[in-house]
Image (cartoon, rainbow, N blue to C red):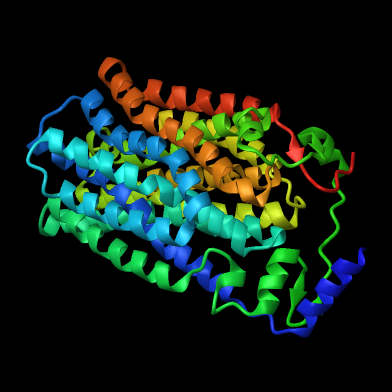
Amino acid sequence: MSQTTVNTQSNVASGKVTKFRWVVLALIFVIYTIATADRANIGIAMPFIRKEFPMSNTEAGMMMSLFFAGYVLSMIPGGFLVRKLGVSKIFSIFMFFTSLFTGLIGMAGSIFQMKLFRLGVGLSEGPLAVGMPTTINNWFPAKEKGFATGIFIAASKFGPLVVPPLCGLIIQMWGWREIFFFFAIPGVLLGIAWYFIVADKPSQSRFCSPAEAEYIETDAVVIEGKKKEAKPYKLAWLDKIVRAKKIERLDTPKKIFTSWNMIGSSLGYFFMIAITTTMMSWIPTYLVTVKKLAIMKMAFAAAAPFAGTVIGNMVGGWLSDNVFGKRRKPLMLFTALTTSFMMYSLITSPADPWLLGGLLFVTGFFLSLGFSAFVVYPMGLVTKEQFSIATAITNTGGQLGGFCTPIAIGWLLDKYNWDIVFTALAAGCLICFLLVSTIEEPVDDPLV
């Protein structure tokens, strides 16, 4: 251990390590819950929108995909904006526009207007998805990043969890338009709160003690002034399977864009996002048209997979940090394989709402055990200065899956049926498994 490291750890131990980073994480959870609710609510509203604006399955899929088109288009530019101007300014501006376009959807008088506003929501939300992981990367030491990212990803599933029952109630009381008015208001207030509360880095925050900032920067494991040794990692056999190795961190955009580790993980994320998009956009329609569920029964069944994902993300983040020694690939591989099985099992899903909800819950749990690992993985590949770019690339790959999937499912439903849809999704998960198998596991201390 170097003298600098010894002095740094001594400074951390002698000062008061505040816990403001957990306040930041709580705010991330609330804000991203609202942001993802803005993208999920159209899936619940769609069966009722189609009664007012008749359209084919392919057309409905196109409308739902437009969010992801805007999301993808703004992701990489958003990454450069975050790197240049910081998260605080960019986040607050785009959170306002996300809420604005959400409210405008409820005022749409034609399919064209609805498509335009849906695209606007996607364009506005893209930079938010870059800003959140960048904040986690800046505000948490490596040991806590897996758990923090699990909470962040859990927020992206908690939004779709609360949306179905809430939207079902709003539709019963008023109508589908009021859904979008309801979700437009909180985002504006939360964007303002973020600007005044969260600094880009701990060292710039008036709420974060110097000791906590130093703890985050040096990755010392300190609790209440006492150093705590991290648990030793001994799974050498697993390092062989996941191809763990020490790599030189990527420090330029060119290196990041040409890295197969980045490309392979982003392509794998494409198929994982395809599954979550299906759950958000098409499963409510499936429950209404195929399973013939009433509004509130549909709402609770549609929420079931996201109840599973909230738990799965937190469990997966903890396992990644504490059991697998910050190795991300084990859970990435496991979740791809088990999700493939669960997609295929939906072909013979039960008609009983409770049993069907249970099956969807388990599906969401397995899907999300390794979901956060896809987001955390680039942290081990790049320098902190380039992380916003790496995040933008990963999310762009994933959200391309979000763009393609609703259209593809709509087309498959117009031509075939749901059995073909679930078979195609199962095959996509197997492709994800193969892609993740080809990338390396970047670690500082490989056991092989």
